Length: 386
Ligand SMILES: *Cc1c(COP(=O)(O)O)cnc(C)c1O
Image (tube, rainbow, N blue to C red; front, side, top):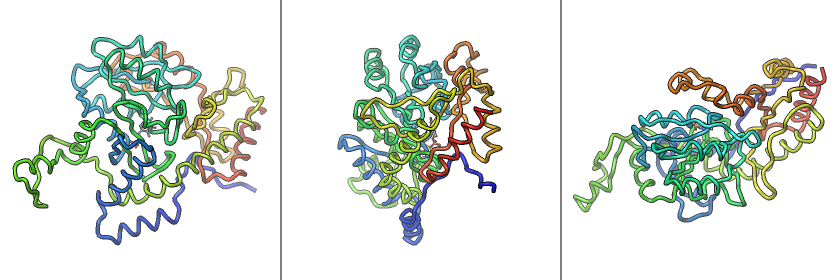
């Protein structure tokens, strides 16, 4: 008996999401409108801090771009982030004509290394983008302390980190300038494509709202007319097309209601993996501090040096057993664009390089049954024994 292929990731879309999308389609309003607004309000309520503003966008990449644009990042500026991330974290800096300064990771957490961060701060540094790798929250209090001491802005790449906590506080509620979540298809909740920019900076929020839709301002028009007829608007900047549709927001409304239950199931799968892999020559993913939530977007193991099998061959062997895996990430310093632009060499990032060569992300998603999880455990055990 051969089992069907177990993909690396699958979204969990329920009947409530489907009904809400259908309702949107029948409503006559399918682009940004009442559901996107409600999704923003619900997201703000989820984070539970009335000072926060939530701005729905069509991707986390868009949200990161808007945040940095609103902070005035531009040519001559430098933004510090980790090499061990997806290119979206860094590409937005390039959009603005600024420079990316990549730093190495702490091998314990696979998140940016705080000593490297401090050492990388220079006269052109303007902002830091911490990435909560896999859903394990970065020590934000330490990052913010450092940022304040040097007058730097902080924009959190929280694409993996809903709902993650550090010191009991949800990612998104720290005193960063902005935090950006992703609702891409494989993230911890999804709108197909989508993202949320969260900030307590009213000026940044206003700028992002204007820039996400072509630089259109109704308020500016209002100042001159004291009255805004529905056709009237002013363009105050060359903005972008980053608004979230109501069709996508319809999914988000219901996904958000389930995001805590999703986290619990992911944490359960992670715990089953931890137990199932005991004694194997692998480094298990780091655990959150006691009482903290790990979003478990990723369950990334590292093969030990005595595993007796190369990483690529390990992934192939799991594929042959019908199990999809991935690698997070091919670090930015290995990609031609980043490597050539900044003349990067692997020796500059020994921890990320070492991790990359051994990393394997295993399937972890709510639609996996306990039997699916056992199947992965058995396959990993068999491959490492064989
Ligand atoms: C998914 C992801 C992004 C981009 O999210 P989109 O919503 O697809 O734009 C950014 N950073 C990290 C670390 C991601 O994993």
